[in-house]
Length: 281
Image (cartoon, rainbow, N blue to C red; front, side, top):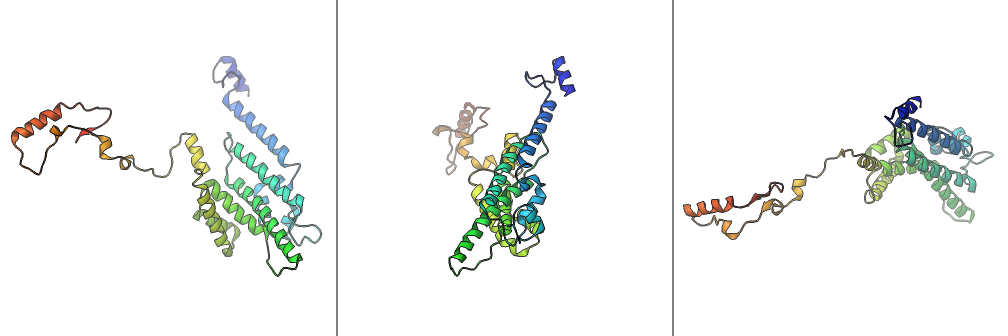
């Protein structure tokens, strides 16, 4: 900050007419983001208050476990089932919405922030919410005397949601499934993971590129993937210069030397645009 003020007094190294150096603005932005994040995360929800990795593991776990119960993801009392009350489900959606807002801003800020962990967190909270809704539907069917007997684990929905969200962010498929398999260690989850990653990629590709490709394009960075060769997208007519009938030669018949000389003189008189890069045909 001192260096920025000194630079402003000397008339150099400032940003616009504010009198601050760019480094000072970056520091101020980082401090502002930290204050706003603390004000939004700490007072309200334990899922937002804890470190992201610990919260993700809690969202993945089934009830009753001490970690999930500590984050309010399990019902009170015996904690034998998930917390599916209105406030419990609302808290998950609020956590997801706040994290989307925070991630959207900090990804473009001058901070060492990424998308891998936030996207897993967002997908896990939304997936856990969907799991709670499905759990309520199955419970209501059982209470009404239905013969439908299903065991619903919202933690499994959180895993699938995390895979789908991360695949939608960065459009990874096989590598993402392998990463989630190593994270969970459950071979039976591979098929849901593959279906979620593939569905997210198929839905996202027609709409927009991955967030990494989009951000690289905004910054003027060339794509990593090999681009289509422009020569394969052109026809001969785009490069050649049109000539008259007298400038053509029928090679199926015998040609006299005088005809070849006349053709050479005709081609020499053609004005070829040097900028167009064309050639007579």
